[in-house]
Length: 570
Image (cartoon, rainbow, N blue to C red; front, side, top):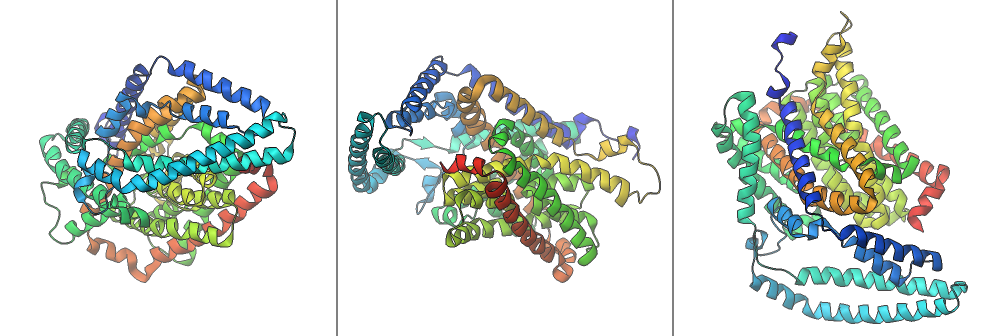
């Protein structure tokens, strides 16, 4: 394709993915910083002073320290009227067990019933909490009278405080179950659809010159997305980890391979358009300050192991399995080694993989992610593996970020933090790997060394939405450093991202997964499963990934940098 024949930036999916992502993020910045309560900054300073004084006086975190810390954690923009509105606007169907209506509507009757069911448990938990609080105060008081010089009294106080905190956490969960208010999600879902239809519709008109056809088809895709979220919100589905992504693809596949995807829906079946926008938003969640908080061991696990797995898996597919399609091979390798769907989409764009090859890679990732997020934590607990090591192992091997957090939480708070941070570090490689794949396929695979490839050709091949992903990460990392950790947590973590862009990213991913299902026909995939080579590739690569990640995580966290590991355990 000559440079004159290439579409301009404003007429490409990558261009509009960046523009829509920027529009969402800039809107969030303006709204949430404008709505920040005037006293939040002074309250943060007040609570920090209390915690500093307590730390200077006692060799352990006291009851007063934890109360100030909790009060500071409650300074969140997602608890303000603006935050609550955006949470509702971008929200998904709620958790439900036996009554499907509760997924969309909570009434006062639901709240009363829920409260009655938990009343006895809540009363009992509150009694235990009061007793443990009194005991913690008593033991801490004894330690304080000795000016915290008595190690035995200090240890006794720490144990009592830990028991009080455990009871407080359990009681808070019961209170959340019992609490509630009238809430009808239907109007918010309608409003969310209108917003999506406008922003995506304008982009579609600029690219393809149709607007209303896209909106009509989008309604069909959006409704399936709601159904996927609805089914994944059922308590049993949540327990076994069968998430919205799996449901979205399954429902789409059932439709496309039975009655067929209606022709009037196809203008809105835009897999990459949706997911690229979501990936731009994902960039805002990858903050460099948080990456550095885990130190060199986490960076080493994510940035050294991952490229090794990618290269070895690709080599194995080509030299041992003899997979004929190099684009399928590299897409599966990136999906499995980096971070699942996000990496698969970026690499597929860079090497120009076929639609069905991308679908196959994502399908394999979904299946193995669902299995690993359940089995890996069970295996870690069964072997008695240290929590930090287990978290690092999970973060480096399970594909999807949500599954990583869920699996890490199963082990504990420290494991969840380590796992999520390593996965976040790994996500940074999306752009880097896509860039090198674009170079390799342009110069070696397609060109076969016949002629010199210009830099502009590589630039045309490079997936431009990655620039939005990297740019969002740089801007939000800088902003986080500028406003400080306290306001960064309040406004960015628990406001712009937590109450707004992260929810929208989930919806965009969901629409993309629905589109994958609606656009996929099993007949097209059949040829790629010949000999079971893609499955063998994924299993072999993931096995190698599990072994190498565990080895490197152990060496880095427990042999080379044990002092960083101690920060999480003490």
